[in-house]
Amino acid sequence: MFTGKPFGPPPFGFFAKVLVGRGDFKVLVLRILRERPMHGYEITQTLGERSHGFYRPNPGAVYPALRALLRKGYVAKAGGERRKTYRITPAGRRFLRSREAAVQRYFRRFEESIGPERAAMMREMRATGRLLGSNLRDVTPAQAKELGRLFVDLRERILRILAG
Image (cartoon, rainbow, N blue to C red):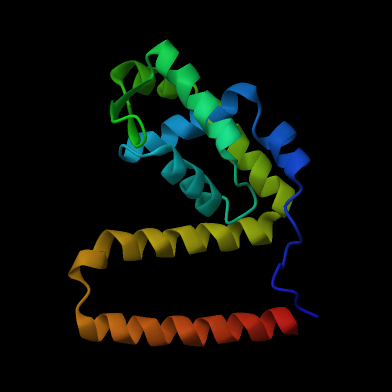
């Protein structure tokens, strides 16, 4: 019977120790900041979304990583005492380029841990999300309504497959 968690609960120890090594977590944070400046909370949410719920770091991991990246000059912060926005610096971009092979190993290990079929499914989900995200401003109200119906139908089909 489908429980709503098709892959079971995320094994935190596995992801924390195997997939996200000590230096790799900072690299993941820099990869996210490469897209745009963000608050610490946004970074946490983005990591959770990108891993489709398999890995959601707590603030006890994100903020120390940001402080370490600040000390190294890889990120800069702006804003007041409570809402700081972090952005990647040119030095951070250089460091990120030097670590790209490690990042690719992380994603390969993640995909190996869930299997090739699930990994392919997640790549398709990400591609669909990128397609919609990059065109969101151009979607007309009629298109939004039609896409909304499509997602309802898709969700119902997914539930039938998972329940089967």
